[in-house]
Length: 262
Image 1 (cartoon, one colour):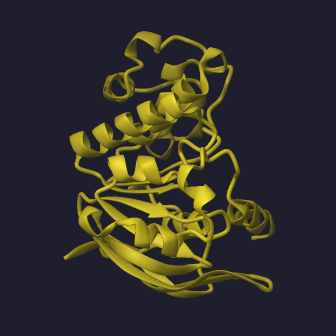
Image 2 (image 1 turned 180 degrees about the vertical axis):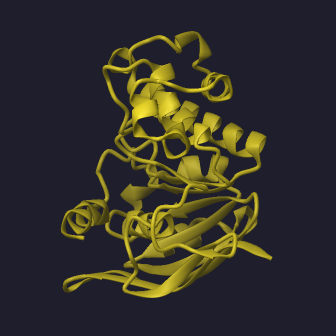
C-alpha cells in the first residue's frame, strides 16, 4: 500500500502551467529524488504535497489523509534555511515543537524535558551537538541547513520534504548535508522526497528518481534505469547535469506570490 499518493495533480498560476497531470505513488520509507531543470515544477509539487499550495486539479494523500493544508506529520526543509540567526542552533531546533507546544511556549522556551532531549538528539543526528549553543548567524551555510534538518526532525514527522536543500551550498557542504539528510531518513524510517538540480548528488543518494519537465513526469524509476538517456530526457541542455544549484527555481518564486495572494 502506498504511503504517498499523488493523483492527476495540476497547478496553474494565471497563464502558467506549473504542473500538468502529475501522478505517482511512494511506499512508506522510500527516499525519492525529484529532478528537473529550473521551472520544471519541482518546488510547486513539493509545496502542494506539504499543503502550502493548493492544486488546481487532482489530489494528494499521505498516510490516507488528503493534504489540503499544512499537516503536523509532514516536515518541510526549505532552500533558504528559514532559521533565526540570533538564536542558537539548539533554540532553532526547539522551534520544531511549535505545533505541539504553542507559540508562547516556543518563544519563551517553556519546553518539557522530553522536547529538550529531542532537540539535542536531532542536533546529534546532523552532527551539530557540539555546536548546540552557537548562534546560527555565526554558522556556515551548510551548518545552518543542518540546523533546519534538526528542526524538522523535532517536529516528529512521518514524511520529510526537502526543496533544493543544497541549492546555495558549495559542493563539499552539499555532500555533507545530503549525507545527514539520508542518515536522518534511514534512522527514523521517514518517507522522504527531495528535489535537486544536481544529477551527481541524485545518483549518489537517491533510491528512486522522478524526473519533471515542463510540469510533467517524464521519468519514474530506480537507479538501474537511471541512465544518460533519462538525463537527456529530463534536461534540455547538458549544462544542468553538473549544475551547482545556485539558481533558485522560478516556480518557487511563483509559489511565494501565490502564498501572498492566497
